Image (cartoon, rainbow, N blue to C red; front, side, top):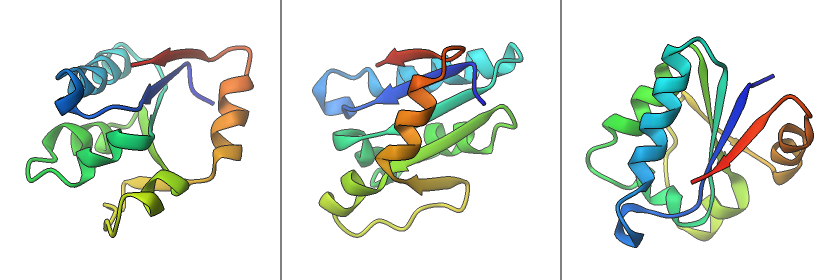
Length: 107
């Protein structure tokens, strides 16, 4: 189970902060924390960007697990997920969120 749950719902066009959530995830992971990053809604656009460096760096970090909401993925078109990023149902997100030891961060 993760120590931190970072939830991204916006893309950089909504204010430029989406990739800073990925930076936070990396900083926490480098400090030895287990981090889950979930992409919802417009944050799916991170997978459309030509430069996927930030999301792929997170997904390849040993202390970070990256998820994409299946419903958001279906709503936003045909995206081929890198093998390091898992498409998951909202039920899995809810279970993670309800864990008392997890610290959620909506970013």
